[in-house]
Image 1 (cartoon, rainbow, N blue to C red):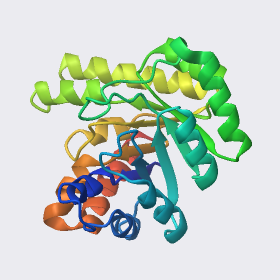
Image 2 (cartoon, one colour):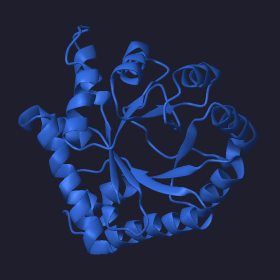
Image 3 (cartoon, rainbow, N blue to C red):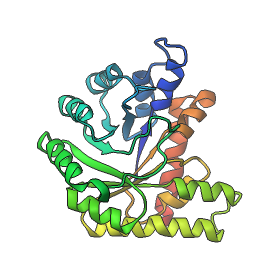
Image 4 (cartoon, rainbow, N blue to C red):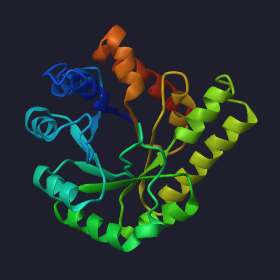
Length: 251
């Protein structure tokens, strides 16, 4: 059954805008869990622009929900992950000047280093995921380094969907869906778990949720934005309803 991981980074973004103590990302995680989230995702960035070290420690200690720690594959972040032991750690590319993650991780360019990082986390009982573009070569590289999960970058699909006026049947959108589909089939064929995420929202989520074998969608900004008006529980509940409805139709 398809699952929803809620990224709460932008709850922390709002807090950091005033350098105060609220809104509290831990409270947001609890509310998301009560709304039906299956997991919580946070990205502890090198520049600490939103989520802070203390947030991750509190999430690990105070909540009863699966934690996915997005991170660059640096020595600092590996040390933090091994100490905290989240259920899953996802390697992502990280640029100091980007607003959000702009593309998938280029595993092929750094296989030896990433293979060692995967092994270290696996030795500490942490499932390792990689955030990659929908490219067969990157999927194959992910398998070679020992990743157990691949999350396919859905940003190109989301941008095509918006540019096409939310027409899921437009040729450009169909082509992007096919890329994600084919990457998912390759992931599953190599014995890894197929996840997807980035720029998914209440309008574009269903064609991705309908793909065969997709296990988790990780969604943050759209849910946090909706939560400003309707509350976190209702925002999560509605997203999960859309996902489950689409997944059921795709069976």
